Image (cartoon, rainbow over the protein chains, first blue to last red):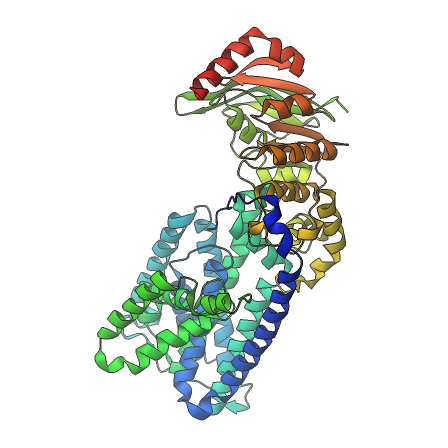
Length: 336
Length: 253
């Protein structure tokens, strides 16, 4: 995505600020990140005291979905336009495992994640052969196939979706029909997923991903098998998107076509862009903004889409780095 | 082992009906600096991309240390010890200079696929990365993002990164392109310094740099080898003077 920029400064310009600035920035960034982590964890733990738990659970599912998506677009430079297939497809698998096979919800969610990983392997293997818009089109086309399978296959319930998925119990101890155990179950899944993504970005693997995103031919010329890195990132992203979708199916006891529809793929792009792609906390902020708007503006019907569209245009024109990206820039801290 | 580290035999590449490179034979002596020169459109860049596997030849073979590498991928030859640079400076712009070099050094830790591991392990490479930066005069820029470095220093960073792989053969694509005369001198000195113990092939427009650095030269014109030899020999060759200067004169006009 980023082209290597050529600058024509003289040698002296760079010399002066060389030593001091990066260390200060590093220290500030660390402090800011520590604060954000505390705020995030506190918010997740305390939210059900103030807000309607199901609403917050929905937020968490979408936040995880957006973070998983961001791992691809923000940290690998791949624009997938088919992530709904993993989110929605896994929801059906999870629903089926729990409702028809009668297995516990945690097993259902893991099954959804494994299914999404396998699907991600297939879609990723095909899509990474092409770049840019062609990559996006291949992911979209394959996601449409998944959508039509979801519409046609008998076990999905077609237009009606898969309804009445039981929430069951966690480890046979906690009744997930109670709002609070269910909430903290979802919160734990979200935090675990968020941590996995955070660690992936800050791993030796993540370092190579960043190199690939910044200058792919150079990464190849240094001997990195770029396709393999992209594929692993794709599978990771898909499986976490699947976990998010499966969890949502348990929360709402319902897997529907909406979650596998291409509009959902668009929505997750929107959330990531508004929050700030390539930032750690951006997708969480973006999904909070979008879901909250959809929730509180539900009364005005389809005008919600107009409002969201307007916000999107404003954000692309005025703050392209997204909410978190722009804030980080103003405060001169790192957003990763 | 043969005296030649890299040999290209009857190498051709056509794009549609256009033969960009036609039956080129090239032998690169081990430990030498070899320059590929020629007027615009002579096929230098195509030749360079063929040798570095970024494009595949229509026919012909390439051997490296006696091994046929004609059908390998760029990342595979990199792991054999052939590393290239690019015409536009090839750095990772938002990584610091230190991190840029570490990307190359990281390969030997064999942890690059471990997404579950903290990248703190990479800091074990910091000392060596700093030493590499020092080698090219960039030590005090270690924590500056590459994008903020001036052009000449970006090229130096690129060379430091390449050296991190300890390549046996380095291919430099117009290393002094777009530079002011001070930077050209610095980069030329740097190339001379790092050429010790390895082989370098470079495409270069600046004949001053070529005359100063190159042990041998291949002149390409219209996709074919026009002349070969030392700078002295080549610069006196009438065919070269005609092809090269003729087009040069037009360019100036």
